[in-house]
Amino acid sequence: MVRALYPGSFDPVTLGHLDLVARARRMFDSVTVAVARNSSKNPVFSVEERIELLRAELPGDVEVVGFSELVVEFAAREGYDAILRGLRNIGDFEFEYQMALTNRHLKPDIETVFVMPSHAYSYVSSSLIKDIVRFGGDVSSFVPARVAAAMRAKLEG
Image 1 (cartoon, rainbow, N blue to C red):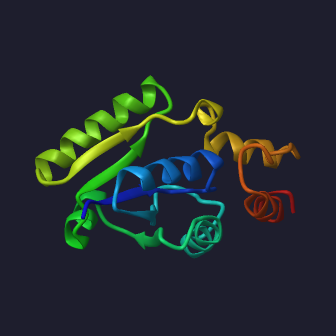
Image 2: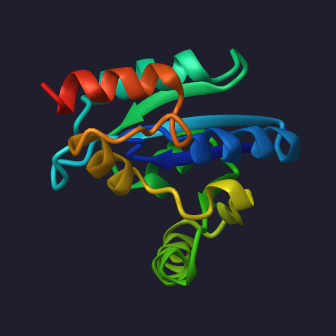
């Protein structure tokens, strides 16, 4: 059984994230989404809120967990075979390539798998979505309705 871990901040979860999970479910026996506790970022949603939003949007066979350590250490400790990463552009590639090589050095048995987004989500980023909401814009084509409502409650208030 090949188990994949899809880590990220997911602040907020986007339709691009959900699309990547849907495609990963066809490639791997199991997929777990891992929400990062990152003290260097200033998230809109707590880890618990992000986990709750993800669980509400994902099918029941996709586990959602939080973590607060190096991704590759978490993956090794929990028995994952692959770390799943989305690549939207060349900037993503440069950063993710360096991280993948570092992870391979630390844990050679864990592969990093890069997945390109669907064309419809190739330009979507959580940062842009937050800015759109802060200025009262419509994000319904970028995030699920539940996430859009939660963002408006947090950012427009």
